[in-house]
Length: 260
Length: 189
Image (tube, rainbow over the protein chains, first blue to last red):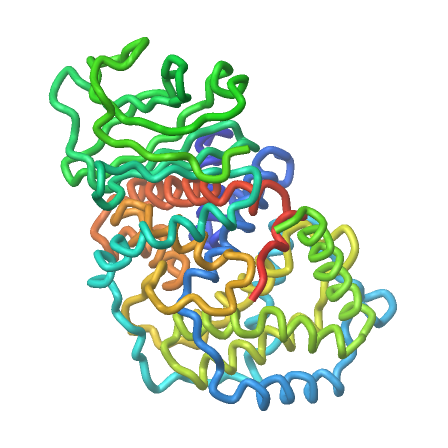
């Protein structure tokens, strides 16, 4: 397999989702490929953040649990505190191997079999989640920090039907449309960076599928980077390939939040 | 959130891991206070059982204590490390026929002082349905790409591509939080 093929496995590897042979092949490549290592590490950080997407629940006996953990620790000395046995996970492969070793390390004495399985099914609540997006936007904008800004695109007085993240670190726009009908044949959607009293600047084009959804990652053009303050973002329908300037009024419009 | 605050978190996370490596039980207690609830929530989402989830938490922190990382070995953030341990453990404890799993759920956002939770959920909510399903099965279901493909009746290459797209999108959307491991400490529970 080529480097490019293997690179496609980096996300799955970081999630521990490669089967044995694939994993072995990827790890063999990983040992000598710094760019794949960096990919894996970035995806491992994403995987860590995904824990926040689990429904937040508190352990029913949190104080007792904490006490138990610390009591058990008192009887054990960390490997690193003993001479010669220090374990170093210098590669992602070793890091994952350490995770796997948990099975062996604590499995025998503490194994407990779940008798019940009552994971809540929340598929049906996705629609409700969408409805909350507008409310949450203000939270996101407040929290994303100086490197990422966001705009929600909507028709006047309607719920947002698309959103664009502006990642300044990577100099990309991440477009995600969730309720935009696909452009007719020969047409495409085009996004515009809008400043009061200035000509619109193209941010790029994208399309949606039959379900009204679409995602795109667009490089930020230099004229936009150089413009400094951008007020708004607009979406128009344009001929295939896009237009130098918009040929209609924006169908969807939104203001960038917390743009410096 | 100021850059200073984020950096001070870096120090604190690293310092806690260093303290644990040196055998300081208070550091273990502090790490539990910081990430215990997140690990428990993740384990509960994966197993659907309170007792099993507690076992996962207990086992993970025992593992962190027994085999801590230190110094330059700490390439990824503490949260990523700990949650990877938790996923492996939860998968092994869970009944094979465990029910469905879902990310980006609608539970009230509490203890979300720096907005990590709401930001991550918003990003996940923006994933196309099919990509989110693949990600859920791989992440919370602990399935391999091959298992996900069989479960959803997809070609393996398609499942891999969807998983890749989902992670690629999340990585871009979560931008500043994953640009470097050092920034990751914005995560707080």
